[in-house]
Image 1 (spheres, rainbow, N blue to C red):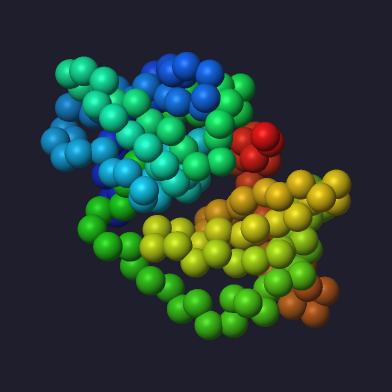
Image 2: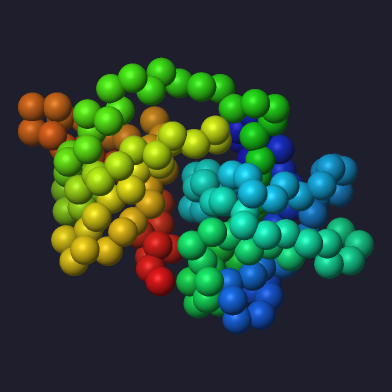
Length: 174
């Protein structure tokens, strides 16, 4: 965990049930409560990917059960088993968000210039800006809009090239 602005909550150790729940083993240095109805980050392929906790509950000493918004099946959430769960330390720093609505309609390409989809909306959350992207087959994909993932923005061609963690697009599958 290289980001000093984030707190390690723990590691996701296994799936819980069939409705997309996971079991988190809390880090010994974390002494707070697991947030609910808030954004956290799962360290996936070395990059923090935002997830919204829709429900959480204690599951014993050093354990908690979590359910994330948009992940209602065990198969959908399985790729994050073994990943660290992080939370912002204090308030998230706000970036200037003026002009973000102008990104609607931009094309998102991956690092190999393969088409991912078109931006339908820029979602401003306290923890992370998110892009709601509609793929070529009409599927909705949520992508974190973070400077570490952006390789190039071409305003004249209305394209954004992003270096996305392997499997991020698959995490959005129902």
